[in-house]
Length: 197
Length: 193
Image (cartoon, rainbow over all chains, first blue to last red; front, side, top):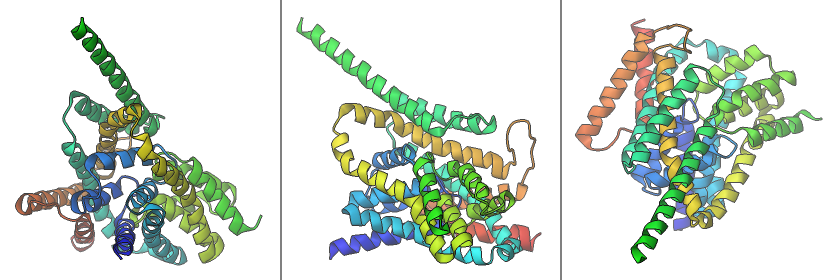
């Protein structure tokens, strides 16, 4: 019974994510963060960052990746099926209807006005989602430096239209993480040796 | 090739090779769809504007739209299934082995290195959008087209949710924020004009 209920919650929550994600990509981070990290506490901030890392470094829409992953983690295969279905259902229905009246829809001025407002809010939502996640992270020198550098780098890439995919920035971060780990384990071994002598 | 199968395979291919999410997919979808003669590039640009301002992941929206215009409801379903399937299968594989993977110190070190970067990328995306959507800077050298009404809406939304946060000790639902901003958009651009 509990199982069915969780499947239903997964479906419903990702339905909500699909219904209220405007602008794609990181826009849904705000809603998923609130639903699964803040409210249900099914994921910690670190785990959620890992979900995003996996989503970023595998092909496909980030939201589909996240839905599949969170669903699987919570309820196995069926969890991922229900989450993904919930996520894409609003799009399917809404876009199918729009495709029938595309020309008329795009001319509706009130629709345009509403969307202009929504775009401004989406900017705020993305900013606050990223900052909120960062505030929950331990403030080590590496974390703070990597956060600031990757923020600035992404802004520069867009402003100067450099051809540098975001996935490379992620890979560099991972490489630095491994390098720090190698150095610190080597240093620890060294110290242990020194202690024995 | 029957158009339904073609739709499914085309979007399966797009879903399998597009790293970095929805925006990365836009040039590929445009290229394929125009090359196949399904839609003109102007039509695709028009739809991208709609896809960005209607709910749902952009990739799903584009697949559904192209599928619907070429093959009706079945076309929409097959194109969407195609674009979702690679991500779904790959994540299932990753998720089912990740528990074991995380035990390895190097994998853990990799993730530790990546976490702040992912958060930086999110904030960077937000700043970029702030510059492009609200300040109207497309790229360096292109000049401004300052949207002061958007900036006012941004300011109101930010102020309201920060005050709510302070008073109630929890954050305002993004859904309420979006509905509120839609009303503000209609107020500032429609009622006030």
